[in-house]
Image (cartoon, rainbow, N blue to C red; front, side, top):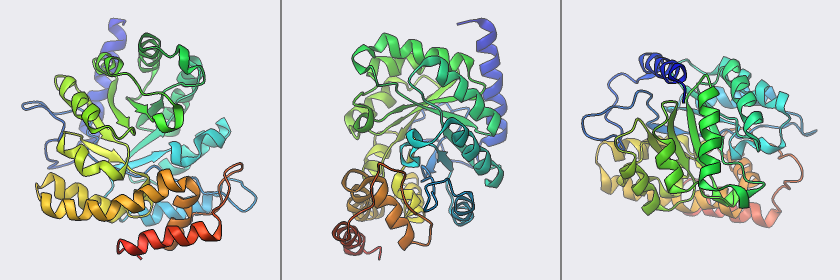
Length: 333
């Protein structure tokens, strides 16, 4: 890695720390004793659902309406163009436009993390630069997976190193095996955590042992582990995760921020009680009914959900009823 790249990355992150470190923020749960991360990711990030009109165009007016409602919730920031944003179904120009619109509406004390992962290293670098120019603070880079048989640990380390070297903003790794069929190998994570411009990982696999080991093995690095789901948020915090990117936060943002606060304050009994009530709704809007279920639930809580882009299909009436019953049974409706 060139010395100039290291110095530039260090300077970018030092400036980011001055701008973004939350006043009075407690030590991140994955932070080793005596060390503070230069770029705080601690807290809750909803991965925004992309609103579409009935004709399946991006509905920027509804997007701005949802952002106004989210502004009153103490999120650490927002994720744009993650899995729940129907990122693969957006044209490159739409992806950049969405980030631009969100940045303009988002208060400067909220981080904007934007998905920029593509199948090739070159395309990922180009889109990451575009996301930075559109106002993203952090790039969320999912594992390339189309040729998953060739995605060895060495290949992935090379890919992410090239992206991080070229990126004008910090990079967060993204492992989501349910969608990609590929778990970012532990040895790759440990190696990449040493890169000065790679600041963390969003792990959506749900393997708490793996997450705890990641925290342990990267404890000497400036690197944070983010839980990728509300279903295992408390467990992730217990093993040292710093924060979380949770689809359910699009619907139940305040309760998830409350759970985050309870864990940080060590109020584990209250946290456990709240976590129990979030498990089934979380499963319903992720594994069970996916993005169509998430968007339907958003409508019950005052947000615009709207249709998905084809080929994602809307829920059937029976599925809608099952979804509603899940939220009702846990006291949310």
